[in-house]
Length: 403
Image (cartoon, rainbow, N blue to C red; front, side, top):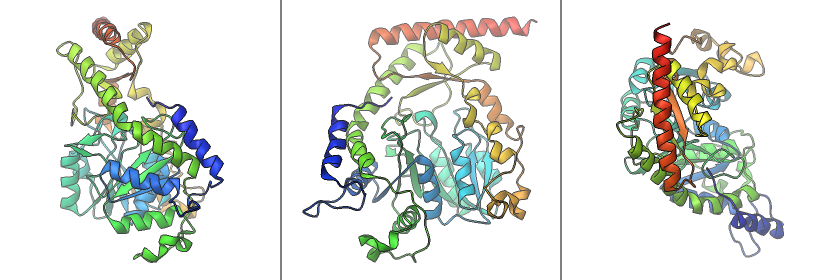
């Protein structure tokens, strides 16, 4: 999905020539570091007052939870369909993850969130999966009613939007990933944005154990506490500054092809619900089939026609029934650090059967990968092929039903 080339090579060369690889090193005339400039530019692009660059999307989630003051004795609601890091991040700060159902669009179901909120719920993490956006209106409404914080997981939806506002800006903070699989990338990397200065300060302290010694420490209004090291380096920040300039063009290209493919398939294939058609990144088209058998037959037929697709049900680490650290109750490297071994943690049960609606939705879903380089001829070929795949899948399902 991402595009990379000579501009990134030159950005890396600029850092190497300067000899300044550490994010807090300024230029000879006091110029801000690449990392400081990227944070400012990213905040502006996302429409947020504050941004913090970190080493990964996982680090962003963890620092975001620290920013929200989530810790031992707290529960955090996360969807059962997401990269496993979303569910492990609460464990890293001493909290207990509570798994919520997803809706037919594979996003966290606000109704199930409302049912699962308890007096111990401190935060909700809606995830914008595969460039699609969650139902933020209802999730934020439920959260505000309960006095619960919202940390948006935007790791797979960098630059997406909801109701005209970038994802990550609807809740209390947003977390992003820039690893090799995202629409802009530095190989690894991440960021947090927020409009709350104290959330930003807490995240900054945690991401850098030496935060108290930095120049901006004089501006802290939150008492300094011990942190770790999720600091980003100047090479990655230089790459991301170039990548950020590519973001809107990449999204525009993907969205045009996503919309064009939908138009060609309209009335011929069932689409899964989309919470904001204008805000999706356009990297994947989500289809809804009649059954698990149809979904399997559909992707088999797509593979035979060289159409890139996959089944979220079979995406391994992205589905809750494969999250062994939760199912086997190993939430940390040592029992004394493990939130699942506390009284609160032992009350939270995890099993492969715990989210039946999520399993049902995943069984009936298929993603089609959108290529930013597709031509009109490619779109015609792929649309015709997908219609054939849908017919093959329906026929296969009928055969199975008569056996």
